[in-house]
Length: 152
Image 1 (tube, rainbow, N blue to C red):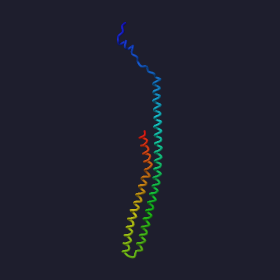
Image 2 (cartoon, rainbow, N blue to C red):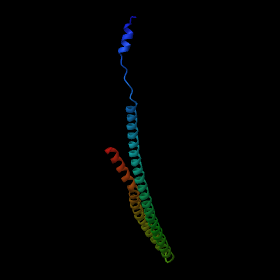
Image 3 (tube, helix red, strand yellow):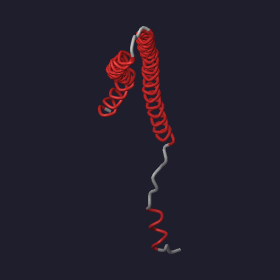
Image 4 (tube, one colour):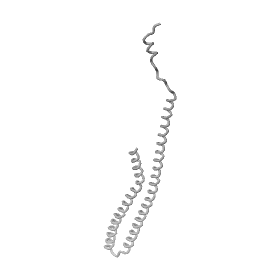
């Protein structure tokens, strides 16, 4: 029997052997790495969620405080306006002439405009401070998150 060249070549070719234990070790290592990465991601997510919750709680408390502050300012402005109105009404009742009524009315309107401008400035200052105070915890948490992302 004579052999063909192809048959000789096939006998001389070696096929790589498959070692199942090495494959199992590689799969195990891959799975362990995946579990470790998942644990790290969960820890970061949990920390981020806790920090966000704290920031929101702080924002809520600040908003509540600021709301009370604005309410008190509003009540004080209403009280001042009512007292000024009643005082003006009493002065008008005591007026002796039409010229005195005109003079009282002019003075009252000038004071009302000045008081309104002053109250508007007060409200603007309180509102600006309120906006800053309410947004500060969220702003701080956001800046911290961005900083951590840059580090990672």
